[in-house]
Image (tube, rainbow, N blue to C red; front, top):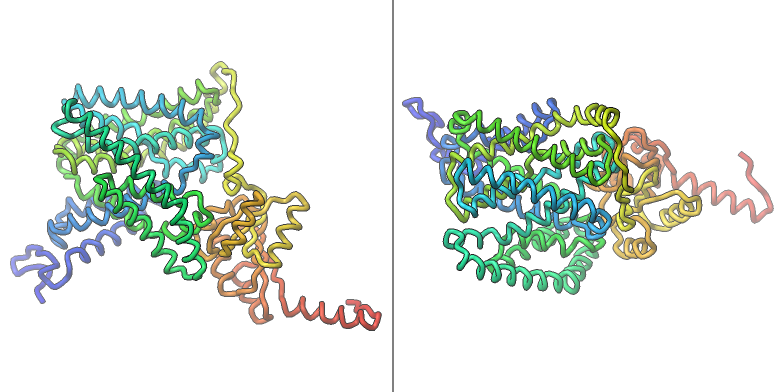
Length: 574
């Protein structure tokens, strides 16, 4: 086996020492991501920035050539493609027509004005300053119009304002952005046909739209007649591994169908998500697919950093700072003014403006995808990529000033007549819960508890893996998740931070102990009640954070004694 360092003291690829190039690169990527993330979390920065910086470091310190060589770039690009597909799949599942209906004023009025004005301004800069042709101008304009939903939603949640009018407005605008970018990604290849000549581009656009409509019709057929039956059959096996494999297979399989029709893979993934968005297995799928999505999406953001020449970026630092300032100030001011004109307070408008003031994940996806269909000069793409990543890093910092700035503006500016804020859609029962009970298990005990709480007017949410029970609850208009309580993502979905009590109504100590830690991490003050069969397991549950333990042995013993004495007309007194 050859040495990692040659006798001349020069680095040679690890592959020559018997280590596969892709394995070497993954090792450095994942270790680097962990270290960078730990540092940036201390600084309250987005993890996406850590991924980007890790790729930047690997590409510009010689590590890429030393550990893997150029052949690893293609492998990383293929893996990052899977990450983008899974991101679109999850986006499709989370897309809600009910949400859009109740936020339509925010989405279609606020979103269309924001996207249109931002594209106009960014397009003029791209055309006049960079001298880009019109297809490239369109790509840059759309990329600048998009925002990071992941960063804004997390910040609103951490600040406890996710139900505020400013956060709801931001969500409506983000929904419109998502719809717009999906349509643009479908049509983007047609923009570059023969340099975007009108006589060739128009038929290509029509053909692409026709294929897209046919593909969506096929997806509707699968969603209605095939996918629900398949998922139910898999769910009945109670095999978590098979369920996860089925979900991944659906995502990739439908994306493959889109590719066969000369459509985008990511369109296929998004439509696959839409196909399962209304089924009862939605939340189970989200919790299963989230870790896989996060891993491959991490690789995508690292790959973005891998493609940037740091020397080129440093030489253009003034341009990068100017682009970053233009994106943040322009979008934050525009979104804030739109929110204000719609009728929101200055405080809500400032929160919305800063939260959506950066570029977004799809901005990077869009610029990366452009290289697949057109020549993309690094002198232009590198500063744009760096500016968009930097704008995402600045949002958590700027958000600290949102409240004092909003309060000052409300106190020192004239008040406008305010319209009623958009209400939470009735269909989103899970998202709107607060001060509720979470019932894990819908057997006889769970049913009784759920009915008793309902009689007292106390809202509850049921978590169970019995598909028939979840169907029954949904048909009765009750909040319920088809999910496994042992998965941490489930507890983020069920609003545990707003709940009063979690009740485990099934006596399975190992499963309960595994779930309790996730609930307790997210809400340290919540009351946890659990059942167990045997006395030697009660202490285990108390040790992991259970407040109230119901011991089946003791309860059964008391019931047996009570019923036996009643035969003799006796009553036991404690």
